[in-house]
Image (tube, rainbow over all chains, first blue to last red; front, side, top):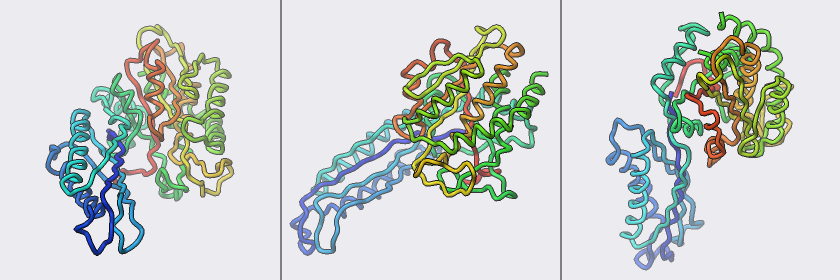
Length: 208
Length: 176
């Protein structure tokens, strides 16, 4: 199973605010921000090779607090995820260009910061085969499955860009026992029978 | 056969390590502040007689040498930080730290690696090479504890040929 790189996007759009009844005397930061949110999806759908997993989500729009004032600033936040380092950094430049130039064209200015986070998890093909074989030997082929790509991120990715790595999952849910909450929720828990398997499988991975 | 011996020991020690998990689960710490967790891990390794180094402030790196220890080096990695979430589970080992919870299973990852360490150490006359145990801080928060551990030399002296990590998977079958 592979996981994505994750970078954080912070945008500030600044323009001359003013009376909402006189937009011609302002640079409408709300409208400009809206254009930017939509335009950024073009990078995912048009610049990216469609076979290459990529997600760009704008997750916050903040600014303004009443009906008749065009605000002087709108702030956006979001996340950019990919599974290819070359495309990842090319996309950063495209994102910055879209934001800065679109804002400028529409009479405002934009500042953008992209905080570079974890690289994608590169599961080594050979090690994946070893891990799968080890898992099948330890708990039986029926109990091993290959999971799908996920666009979540894991800092294990750092190791895998230095040496061959393999990230694998230990099933810990149990529907019959009502252990079904997902990770990152206040009710997440595990079926503790999994611990015996987890510690044994880890030992077995290291010795074979 | 080695696999059967590992299974036997995993079964024998399961209850002990479920208790380890309860302790870690009840005492979660946020990213880069895993001081008690780090001390707990160091103490466990000391009890097992496994040499270790501290890296990136709260990270712990242990080494177990099997037969022909220079023939290969395999790394096993676990993360150890918790999340800023208020636990709602009604269990005896519920988080004692308000607003902090092991909601991503890093308590389980650390437990499984400690359990594997005990098994590997006991069987070290029966497998080849060296196993590097990596307990890392700060998986949940940039810049990522892995990057700090690498800067602090975790992938050198000795350099592992490969690295494995286990992560809990809360559903039996994958749903997206």
